[in-house]
Length: 127
Image (spheres, rainbow, N blue to C red):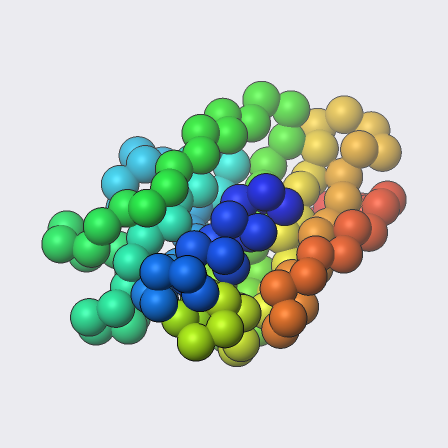
């Protein structure tokens, strides 16, 4: 996740494009329940709705296929993080990645700040 965040920040700035990270079940469309299967980064320049449309290019895909836990995103706006072309920063896209492990005491959170920094918090108790 940290590598993907850094890649997306850098790419948004150097490409001068609005990029969004979202979870996906099929590596093609965004899904609120897909954060543990695939993470996709796509260009969201036209309609800026943070949802991948068929004509919006996928820039990066990561197949997580988590077997021992679940990953969720809880954003400040309730939507996936967007990285802006003028700075690469996720202004208004801060939130928390929450990993709930099926194995005891391996759960954690990664908080994404407005500056695009990730802070690890462990242990984390899943509800």
